[in-house]
Amino acid sequence: MLRAAVELFNRKGYDATSMGDLARELGLTKPAIYHHVAGKEQLLGLALDDALDELTAAVTEASREREGTTAYGRLRAVVRRSVEVLVAHRPSVTLLLRVRGNSEVELAALERRRWLDDRLAELVADAVAEGALRGDVPPALVSRLLFGMVNSLVEWYRPDGAYDTATVADAVTALAFDGLARHETPPDRRDR
Image (tube, rainbow, N blue to C red; front, side, top):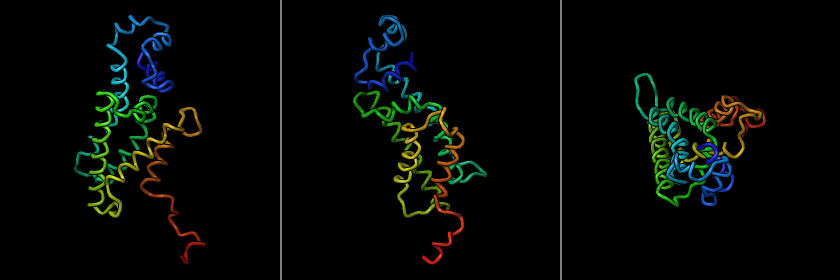
């Protein structure tokens, strides 16, 4: 039921989707749906939790200092993990990225997203303090840009497409932390 609701919310928009639409989509009656959930907002909450729970766990784990790890290493790992989580929960993440705070459920999800941004920014700041990252870009901006790159996958990534999850996770991590520059200076750029 949740998967169908998320697909319908993404296709029609949450506000434009009725419980009658969901009942038709599932081939059920509205009372049959209400037997399982209190309403559309509960389904939205479950979908947004699906989008956020695993990412929250990954960011929480990465935020913990552990012997033998660096903030930089934990930051790279959590960016890679966020790609994997997004791919695994793509329909719910797509829905999450469309919420605007029109209800208590949406406001709570947006608050959770801000918490994730803040934790990632703290991890970036710790990696800067270690000397592993440049310090001329504000950590909060770096956090937003990292999540922005990962979140853009909802627009184009398809599990049955040209790239598997590992390839995309590796590419996002490499671009975010190693950039596009070649490791040796190309001949046409040596004199610049």
